[in-house]
Image (cartoon, rainbow, N blue to C red; front, side, top):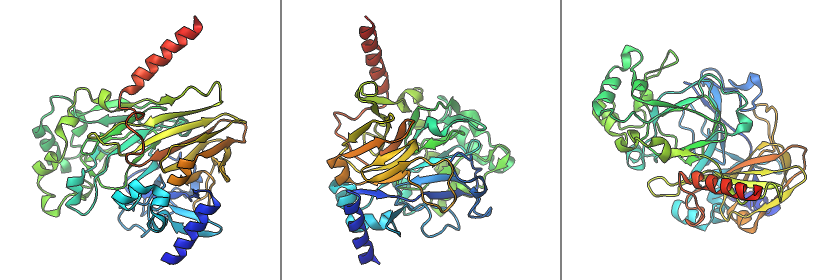
Length: 425
């Protein structure tokens, strides 16, 4: 099989000039309720059975297993589709290595270490954190920083609660959280009383470091993140539904499951009670150049910034107006999904579907290899509405000189406003 995949991936890369067509990857969650904005056929949100839960996630460019109970062995993995053959992107990367993900990533990680997804829930989910590398290593896994962007094309409605609780109110003590966890079986443990909710706005986003509590709201979220699926849920009830305590402890060592102080010490306290939490984590898009009016396309950063000083993942959103085309040269591999319109990328068709039958193929997802990104990828809008696509990148994809920091949107916005005033004069 390995030799077969090797031949197939070589042919696919050659035929697509470094572009790989990916099939949709659907992931259920037994403890959540689908928000039904993933474009799945309405009857298919429980296609894997109600015992597995509803499908409220679609993963992109994933070589990461979804750590669900009773999961399929390939759950969460993306598949490359080429001339009627299917093989996982993980196997493709193992075979082609640097040709797909780039020499630097292959040398350091020997895999594609990130992925992204659409997360789509009807209401809020429990206040939870994702473990850091040191904590996750104790159970044989990796830590999970993540990020959010709320694509306007996928958020025509906000569903039940478009607000996200993040962190803890300044002045909260560890004893307050210990007391909340001790009340787990009493009903609502009241941990949200210790936090603050932020209203979610389409077209904006957040950067979420590991060990920071957050209770995502009901906007559909595009989430570039590290290639791991670890978490601990610290809220005992959501919308009147009990959260199994096993979801608090599942990724901690078994001998610590009843050690409440240990579970509270696992939080990054300084980041959770940060009085400037929004300033240090909130993102707004940053335009790359001023081309929409002149060249009829616009690229912009939608996920950026560093976590503990490291550039771990990022994302851009490209808009191409009808009849226009452009060539993007990122120099780094990326996973692409089309969120609006139709056109082409190289010799691959792009089309954002209206409705997807579970198991059917689409033409909206592509993996852009490092070699293709370095040579430049031509994208053309052949439709009558804007062609919009999101693409996410792995670690250290961009030079520090051009890579924005959290909060930089303010100075770019100020500069754009100043330029606008000059033009009016």
